[in-house]
Length: 164
Image (tube, rainbow, N blue to C red; front, side, top):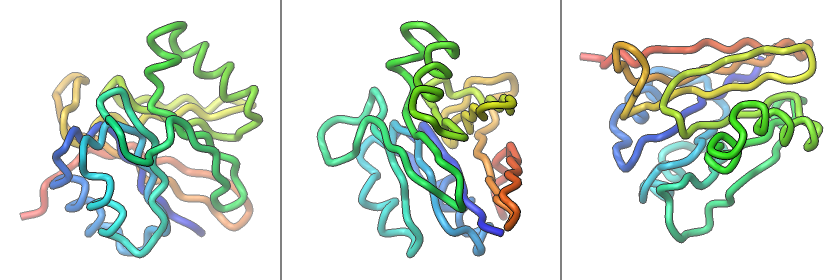
């Protein structure tokens, strides 16, 4: 089994993200879906595992791509912040783009609201925001993704609980 953590929208505050990473010592990758706002290098240096990152609408300059397609544990995954699709056509525009890429999973951020839709042909995932949540209750969120050896994918949508 392979495990990855999925984050978005830290907006310059990586404290919660680093706390979560310490809670998952068996993770093998980090997916960050935009609006890191200056913390990209710090995040990349924080783990020996790959950090797959895309640029959000509040990220300026640097070498972060707008979109990224990768393979992780045999699954084709597209990463985007999502603002270019969600602002001009909603979730349908994002889904259509992802289907045209031929991916199994599309991960996006931007809304600061967790979202998981596991459809027959594609999974759409937004982990919410690790530092500036907008959903009811306003608790920071992230996602744990596990891919079994047989290719089965599990997503756990998590509320951030600060360790004392």
